[in-house]
Structure formats: structure tokens, C-alpha cells
Length: 406
Ligand SMILES: Cc1ncc(COP(=O)(O)O)c(C=O)c1O
Image 1 (tube, protein in one colour):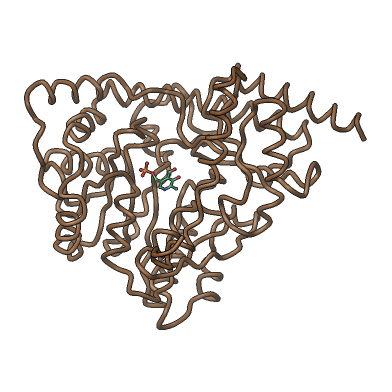
Image 2: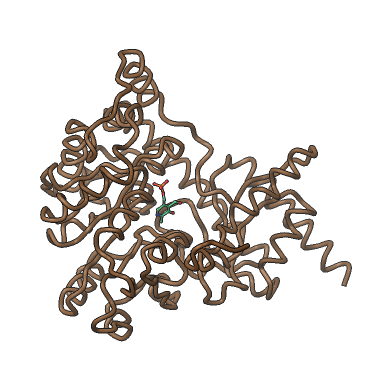
């Protein structure tokens, strides 16, 4: 194929989508596929959100909104930072975007020069380095250790910083594919180190809200919960950028809506870019999202969080019995990053064969970086516990048969 920009050659396909396609092809042949590969839970959007969007559509709210989003929604988000985290953020610093993806694209368009480096953890969310590439910048994958929860440390940031080239550090907490959070004191050190190096800290908090700290009990009331919940990186100072989304915690993946909070002086440039690139985020999605902060919606999300926690705990107990090691116990999100080296040295082939033979779909480590990717597998506990039980049984029988064949 000719005529394509050379940068497109470095943009690898999202492997999980290839697995999903294979899984769908099997399902169309009547195979009962158990989806543990997809990064979105089986829950549909909470009803108060859907009803608010329908009402807005019926009321004729189908036109463009301001490029930075509806002022009412920006204010709701600012209020949420106050009530949930006790952090005061001006709504003027918030840009509503087409998903966290749209936020990351706008941020990189605004801040990265050609040739700049963006430091990020390996393993990590694969699209980030490709976004950087679109703007002729580079995502520098830094191998991380299980001891630091597969998160970058301030010492690594110092060690890998290239003066004149490195521009920013991008972290996710909780992270994909590991579910690991960065403890707040460590995040403080990272922010300080990055400032000293003259860089920027960008924190992706898309999985905030989906955390399973043991000390959080189902009976905790809202004020109790607030004191136990992880803190937002926005508390570190006005220079830190936070990316977030309605996709995961709020159950709105298909609506394509997210946001970011940026230093105030970024806003005119972000607005100009948003006007040109997207005109505005989706109008019905924004009206729906205003209802995402209602008590009813938050209660539904809390129930779902507890259900995800049960699923996580089930797999944490069962996977080691199958031979997987879990080097980092996930604090949040809906992923377990399992070390499969006792079972295979080729997780890509392992996952393909497992899918063909048993209908259980998993994501091999290759999607998330280079470091030992052939030894890791991501389990997404985005389906019912009964289905997880079936998946565990299928994998167990398959592994036993494989051993029997040898
Ligand atoms: C860490 C992380 N950031 C960003 C995204 C993009 O999310 P969205 O564009 O749906 O908000 C994802 C999606 O899986 C993710 O895992």
C-alpha cells in the first residue's frame, strides 16, 4: 500500500480488537464465547442517564453545544471534585471531550512538539503512544517492576528524562492492564520530580471510582467513603493535568464522552483546537451525563462497584489454582494482569488456542507493551460471576487435557 503517511506504519492495531473479531466470528458459528477480553463491563448505562438523554432529545436539544461543553455539565464535574475529593476546581478549567481518547488527543495536540517524548509505563494503555505518534512525538515506554505496582517511580522518571526532548509523564491510576493505583505519597513525589525536571504530569483517572480498597465497607455512608477513597491528582497542584471519562465508572462507553482538567492558561488553546477538530462533544451524551451525578445514578454505580469487587475477588482466588501468578493485586479498574509463565512462554499463541478450543477470550500482554509481554495475560472481569466460573472451569479442563496430551 502506498501513499500513506509514514507515521501510520508505527500505529499498531489494537490486538484486543483482533481477539474480539475472532471471538465474534466464533460466536456467529454458534460457539458460546465468554468475553474476558473486552475493556467494558456488561452493565448498560444507568437508567437516570439514559432517561435524561432521551428527554433532552425529545425537547429538541439536538444542536451543537459550546466546544468546551455545556456550562452546566462543567459545573457538575467541578462540584463532583468538591463533594467526592474535597478539591476545589474552577469549572473554567474543565473541557468536555469525546471520551478520554478525545481529551488525550487534544492535550497532545496542544502540548507536544514534533520529536518530543512522553514518558509512560510499560505495561500500559496502548493507544497513548500511538496518539503521541500522530503528532510526530514519541511515547517512551519504560519497563516497570511488579514491586512498584507496574507504575513508574520518581527515580525512573529522573533516570529516563532526556533534557530538551522529554516533555511530560503520562500515568494512569488505577492503570490498564494492571488495575494498580499509585499511592498518593508516591504521586506527590512524582509530581515534585517532574516539576524539578521542568516537565508536566498528566494523570489518567478514567478508572477512578472503580476501586476496591478493603477498608471500604458496603455499609459506609457517603462521608465515610469520601475519607477512604483515593485522592485525585488534582490535589497535587494546579499544574497537573487530569484526564477522565464517563466511559468506565459511569457506564457510558458508547456515548463517547469524557473530560480533562487543565491549568487555566491551556483553556483558550484547547478550546480553539476542540472547535476545529470536533466542533463540540455529543449533545445528547452531555445531557445524559448531567444526570450521572444524581444520587440515583451514583447509587447504581456503587452497587456495580461492589459487584465488580466480588468478581475480582473470585478470580484472585481461582487464577492461582490454575497456575497463573498475580504479581500485583489490582486496587481498581476491572483487570487482572496475570503472569502465565508457568503455563506458557507465548501468551499470544496460548490465548488464540484457548479461544479456539474453549471459547474463552483473553488479551495477551502484547497489547500493553514490550516488557515480558509474551508471559502476561490480561483478564477483564467484565462479565457475570457465573460466566467467570464457567470460564475458570473451561480453562482448567483445557489445561488438564493439554498436560494429558504431553
Ligand atoms: C487507561 C485508559 N485511558 C483511556 C481510555 C479511553 O477511554 P474512552 O475514550 O472510552 O473514554 C481507556 C479505554 O479503555 C483506558 O483504558
